[in-house]
Image 1 (cartoon, rainbow, N blue to C red):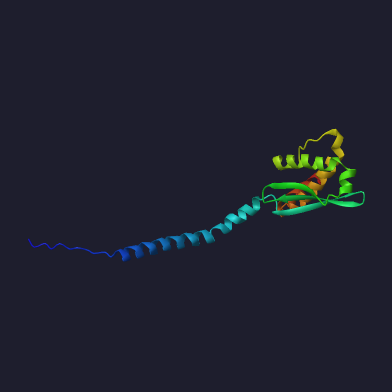
Image 2 (image 1 turned 90 degrees about the vertical axis):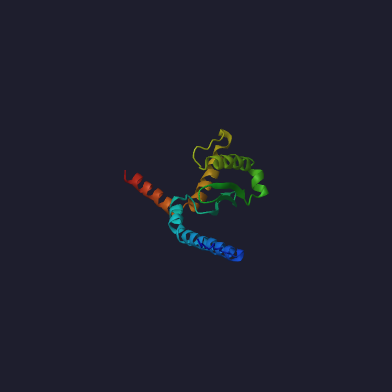
Length: 160
């Protein structure tokens, strides 16, 4: 019996290079799939978002001076509500203004809505003015589809 034993010699360099090229090929294929795949996912995400991310303001006129209510939102959340350009004279003339804003901003942040905000009888008018300003700022932040839905609801209400 003259069977010859064959020995295969693999150089470690060649094995490493082959493994690296296989890994790079897999990464390239995955990258191409993820680059061209999310286009549909992003469109779906845009359709479901409530707001256009950004900082929106609404003005209030008090004693001839302008006070701004600032609302910061991302696509799905109200991040903060605050007063900007609050002058000392306004803060002195309307001492419940800042306190009311702090109270309702906390509730808006927790509820993510301006509905069902509770307030005391002493500052009901101040709170209603602030809530109207917050609502105007949020109207600016709402996406076009959300606004279109609201307008069609309003049109249906007017018809009935």
